[in-house]
Length: 64
Image 1: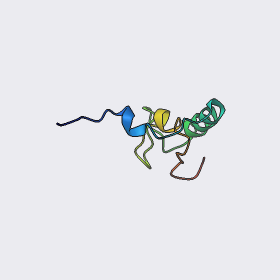
Image 2 (image 1 turned 90 degrees about the vertical axis):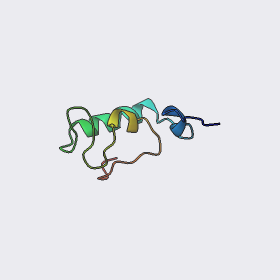
Image 3 (image 1 turned 135 degrees about the vertical axis):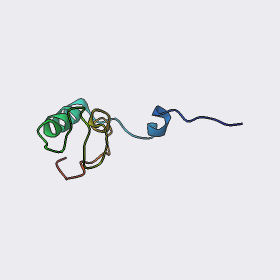
Image 4 (image 1 turned 135 degrees about the horizontal axis):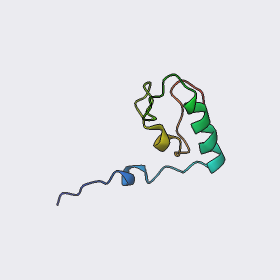
């Protein structure tokens, strides 16, 4: 039996960051020269509107 893994099930073990942390991360990212207009980081390749929600996530250049 072949099961497809959904995108979100891959993140089921991650803890969501508190809203104030998410807001702080997004504010920091929005001024970063490595952020594209699609809110994607050119350093790690992540879509930051998703990555900033994940509690244990880290900025690839150490901003948060």
